[in-house]
Amino acid sequence: GKYYRPTDRISYYLPSQIQPKFTYHELVLHIASDEDANLSRLQWHEQSVEMIDGLYQIENLFGHKFLIYRKQDSRIYLGNDESLEQRIFHLEHVQYREYRLRHHQSNKILNIYQHSLNNESPLVADSQIDQTFTFQYVNHSNKDYYIWPAHQPPTHRSKVLDIYNDPYGHARQNGAQVQSYDFHGGPNQRFRLHAINQNITKLANKMFQVNLCDT
Image (tube, rainbow, N blue to C red; front, side, top):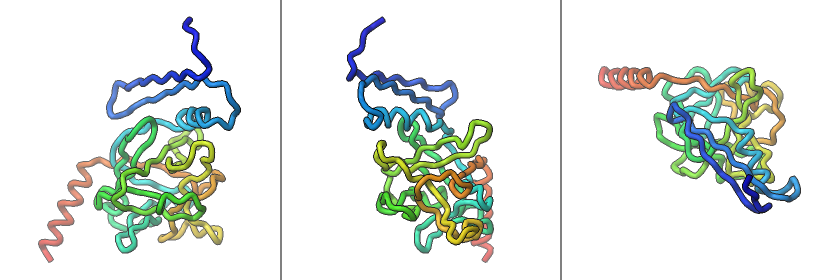
């Protein structure tokens, strides 16, 4: 077969039959140590999974409550007693296996505050569009995920989305902060996505508008 120099890069794209799913594979031929950024980039994409664009509720598995957007401070918290519109997010494919999370009602993008790499940096919603995330299966027997902010350098990728849990058990409470934190794999770092039929959101919005008119 064809001989490739050690520094050659081979990339190929495999669009799936059902859009907008997209499968990306990258092969890097490079003789270097395990710390090399190219090898880390390859590992990044191979560990992440392909998702389907659409509307979702995002459940945390520690207390089985959902991510919600709070307009007062533009932060993301846990809750289960808010209206459906507050906890619906749009998953949008951006590139490779990176996705943007957009709050459906406000149209704001989820970001780690100021793209910080510090522990306990809050997840916020604003107008920036450069924050993306990758999703990694907890295991292949279910559809639970770790969610990795993609602004981290590939060779120092250690933070995932996390629910503040100090003291232990706080992550079960309404109002617990969603943040980035060093990966440890506990249930407060595991998430499950529940697909939402867009017709349901249209009906909910219509009912909300009717109630406003009635008042």
